[in-house]
Image (cartoon, rainbow, N blue to C red; front, side):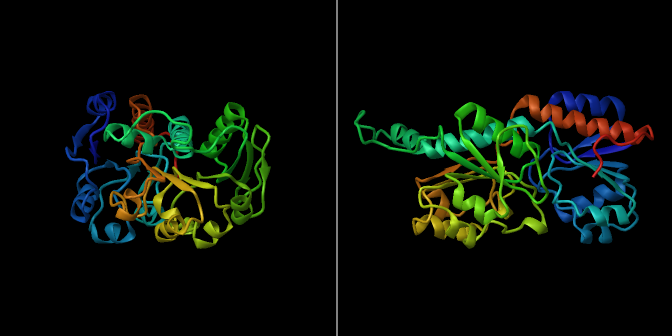
Length: 316
């Protein structure tokens, strides 16, 4: 079978792929163009795409005769793939859940601590040579221990964040989830996002992207948040109305934000990059060698199962 991998992956993953399939690896890291995507569907049996490769309905419709029968997505999120359109054209779709949980939760904690304690601002001060030495009122941030964290989306990642916040920092946990959940820790499920926003010192987003969650966090959410609160997004950028977030920061409705994802990434507005009260990371959520290797190996598990006619481990 011919396998097309849309970005370079860890060496162990590529070695496994090349050992079992006629494998082509695209050498650049930018998202694929529409022409590249239609060609991948026509010329290969299996495609291993990832975030930024927008396999929309129009891509499937314009591809002509489609040879591919599996999109083995590298990542837990698959909102860049129109799954219904893929299936209508005879393709199966898989993803890589589980492998990303702990790394993404750790990134959330990084953003919480950096934003609350103004760590990024302090590092910039030090590196620029502007630090004049310790004094009692310098860079006064917020205590994290004992505060209330509000989590929007209590799936695997949301619960992993809640565990770290509660057991690691003694934080009170409130959350919103569309379905009733009973996480394995003391946590209170509230009936709306606004209720969680009102109650939380730190509001963390941990839910899937896609049309149903686009701009779910908007002006009304920021209006509900207390002025000392901070927003943390390790989910998908389009979940937040970025213009409303900028306005909330500029008008002092919230104290700060920690972001790993952006509405129009890789573009990040100057209105965010210029602000000292915002921690900005370049989509590092799963960026450890161990996790990216595990993600690739799970994608390969799905590919092997497909090739052998077995049930797919993580079909979507």
